[in-house]
Image 1 (cartoon, rainbow, N blue to C red):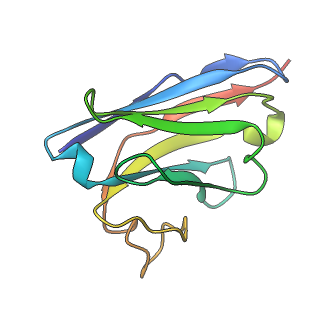
Image 2: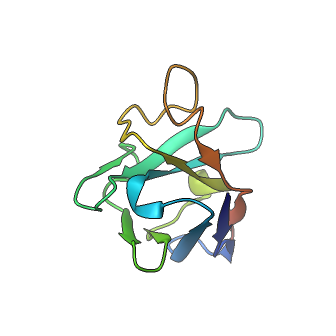
Length: 128
C-alpha cells in the first residue's frame, strides 16, 4: 500500500500549486481521500476530503474558497488545486485514505483517517 504525494514547492504569496496523491496497492475507488497539513510548530490539521466517487467534498473553512479537491479513479489519483496561497498555507501536506468518508477531518481516534493509509508528505512553502 502506498500513497505518493507530490507537487509541493516554493511559491510566492498569491500563487498557485497543484498537489497530487497517487495511490497503489489497494482498491482506490473504495476509499475516501483527505489532505492534511502540518505547519512548523503546529499540530496537523485536516484541509479537505473527498468521497469515493468524488461527488462530495468538504473543506476546512479557511481554504474552501481557494482550494479545490478532485479525483480521477481511473488514474488512482487525487488532486488538490491550491490558489491564492499565503504564508499561512506553508506546511507539509499529507494525503490519507480511508474506507469511510469521515467528515471530521480529524487525524485522531476515533476518526477513521487515523487508522487509514497515509502518504509521506510534500512540502509547500509560501514566501516572497
